[in-house]
Image (cartoon, rainbow, N blue to C red; front, side, top):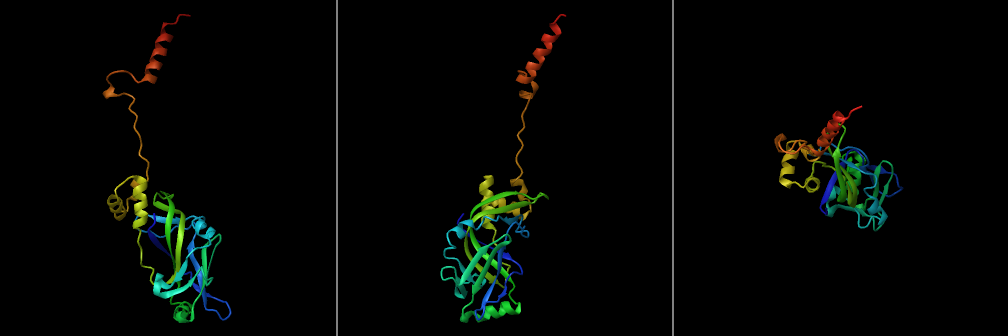
Length: 225
């Protein structure tokens, strides 16, 4: 899966004291926390999800206001964007340029109070919550950017649904229809295999284990003591 996805984290961007530098930051993602309903399923981010990007030195990761290329705030390459993972999630801090003093002020005033991150999924898994609701666990991925955002309404789960369709060997249109009907669990419940102990409607040869038991019973009846 190489398509880019985005997820949002509410209330987690703030001004950070750094002398004269305009620094903002917060958690772009939180680990092992169930998301809101994304359209028939929820998601959980595994603590190892960013391990590859981190091990590679966070290559070419950017901080962009509202994910807009024209609103670049900093980059990992220059050191103006710093990323770290801890027991809570993915934390970022970015030094805003003078030209983006407006973004810094919006965060400082509390007008912008949410963060987002864009990523590409390398590995995921599907299961069910204790309540029987489909859950997608993001296991490994590539971080693209982090962003303070003022509009968290953007939501595209097509990549996640495609992942489930591939896992279940189902048609994507069928999975999308099930998501709209809030019935994705049908693709996660294992199918039961029925073994017929009396083939051909009970006619013909007796099932081998049953025949063996019947033969033993006959031999016992013939014994004389």
